[in-house]
Image 1 (tube, helix red, strand yellow):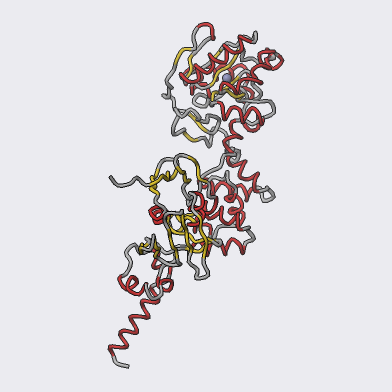
Image 2 (image 1 turned 90 degrees about the horizontal axis):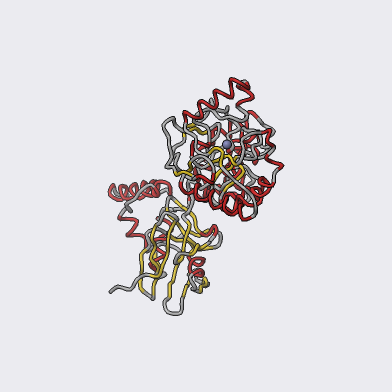
Length: 440
Ligand SMILES: [Zn+2]
């Protein structure tokens, strides 16, 4: 063999070595040679955007996860799912797990080896792995109408919300305008039923709370006082979203009144929930306060009141987005649920071509030649494996190779949309799809 031939061979070998999927996936620019040889054997030289996905799913299957759980872990963690401790993976497979609490789930597992997975996630989400006040964190967005204030989440000394007086016949104090309007509407509706609701305490400043707390500690001792009085900065009253109705005294036995019965039955209609229910002290940190209500809006209030949940429990159960989550798709404003037919591969949103096409009214089938053919009666798309498609017989080059996944042919959403005559717009909610506007 000539030196020249040897050099060619060495070059080809090193090319073959460096063209491992991982190496190619890392490159944004395609080497010219790959483009040149693609026509001959595209699969051999193409980076496989699904390499990490297939490796992760194989490893997860080996650990005993079902395909559905493995898909979920992929959406939550991507390639990071590989190599994590199985007990942590169990936690993170739950939809309400929070990826920024991984270390806390692990610590909880170590402290409670016998704990069930759901219990671990719930306890940590409720912050019950922390020490009240000592481990509290400052609240980032105190004006968020859904803000959670408790012994683990504190407001700054200077925080004062936008406030509006409730007005004479509604009792004393001020609330955030939306909450004030909701309380007035609730009191008006109650009045129609012969029930009188008045605020005895609504917004309280940090300084007012400081005085109250010190007063209760001085007469009742710290341990007792902390079962009903918050340290300054940790009172929900400082948000302007909470109020005490008619009384704030245990001895009044508000829970035995017609007013309380009315509130239990109707408060959610006006967006309020009972914030410190009976027998939830271990979660809320406060004993039963039948008079204390928090404005959270109708939907959350209904869920909590119907299911007997505290606000903490409601928040702890909420589904959390993953770090490798495919965006939600919408078709002309309506949610388009393609389930796991949409996924993120190597940071790109891939969608099952036949599934999206079917959702948009196209029909399709895969021929014996392995080509997926889609049609809406007017246009025809042919999709072989690889990096090319034919639209009405015209060659279209795709930005990435097709990926075979769970029996479907997937390609980048950004490639599929133009083929289907659809334009995609990224919004806060996800990706909005709409018929492409004809050129003027
Ligand atoms: Zn209160």
